[in-house]
Length: 600
Image (cartoon, rainbow, N blue to C red; front, side, top):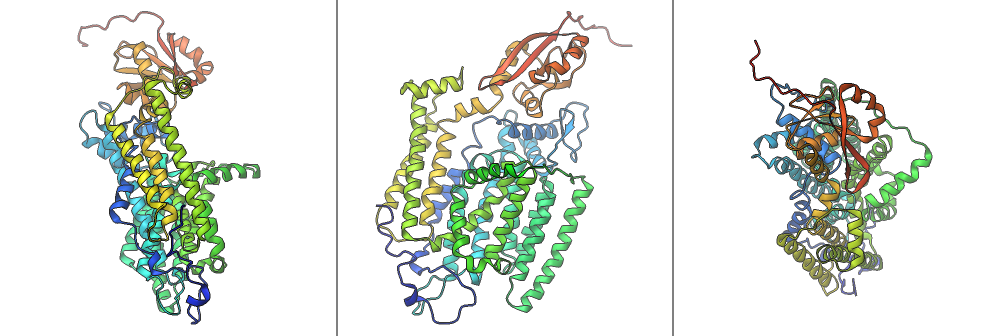
């Protein structure tokens, strides 16, 4: 059974026999033997991260709606129309600027699009975002490692030796923190889209890493803090950058036990003041400050609670357990950065989520801190609780993987009939495709999951990160299966490509479309999938003789459309959303042929 062979678990020795009789200035609940901190094999960890990061970035069109909208901004910056002047400090789409005030992610995407061969723009645009997701995982690992090296986070010393060595213990905790981050359900989709949310996550993780290493590597941490705060500022979150940077630095400065080191921390705070001034100046010069507080009532607390429950699962139960077990230090959390720093990041990002409309994208930046708190639970877990986590994870992710396989089989063969009927009802007109490469990857991932389950149920040395291996691997398995076996279905359901194809069948080959009352994501979809130039609505023209409008705005614009000489030709519905309908108009009267005579 799961956990039966964990003979070297962290709680095997009794507390009275092993704890040294020397006085302890920081009560710690961690009792960890050296045998419990052997590190996760690096090759296994790298392969797991690659299996998580790469799927979802390849082989798909931009998805609705922030993904395609962000790509539209990048495309406009990289390839402006002939004679058009593009302002890189104020990217526009359909004539209006970005409401998120995010510049850096659009600059990065546009820069890589300019390097892309024709037809590969969307792939090249995703390259910097792949790098940002990798940087997020790496920054989280090193941040947890640095916090676990703090004396107050170390396990208690045994009376006769044998306790975990500081570096080995910190490395095992960092492995656990990285696994906890990858296991969070909310990370999967949002971290694979080319949106400002991913850049905010990346720079928040870099800022977290810089603050965590402030006491040990000052130059390195100064660079990380500067990049993190400036990156957050240029990614649309200048206020959050200031709150995280100032509060986190104060926590790290007050945590120094030596007065001499505390005086050095004051110098660090002076450097932080300069960084904050740089961020404020940059945000002011680029006009990035906006008051975007969304009012809420206390009745909306349950919405935030439900969002946090599923978005941070399964890390949040472990994080709460950490707060309970480390409650002896929690009362003075500002003195203990391994508790105070992640708590500050969680509090600020949850507050930002509340005041900006309960968006899961704002909550995304809290995941590295939540994963850190989850890692602190690992050296305090009882064997029975660890086994419960293993059993629940095994059943949950195995059931999810089986469901994905069954539905894929139904799409390919029509058997079982009920899942096939459900797919046909959800995505009418969808034609399944078969890919031997996707099948091979899915089979390899499933076999690796089976091997992992066999390893976890067998006899092996215990490690404090063992309870998070199955959650992280299960989340990676399901994400990989979704982005291989189900990718054609997801692409059909979440992209605008099928809808734009219907528009092209009505209009025929055209290089220009007029628009009225459509959103930025819809406009970006027409630019990307139809390869057309978009013009605001005016009278029909020979070189721009079709008009596309969102049906929701029809009643407001119908009189103006008729007065300009347009006539309805067809309506196009989104296959997986009947509430989204476009109306296509043609000229009410035949247009005169363009004159071949040169203008005098």
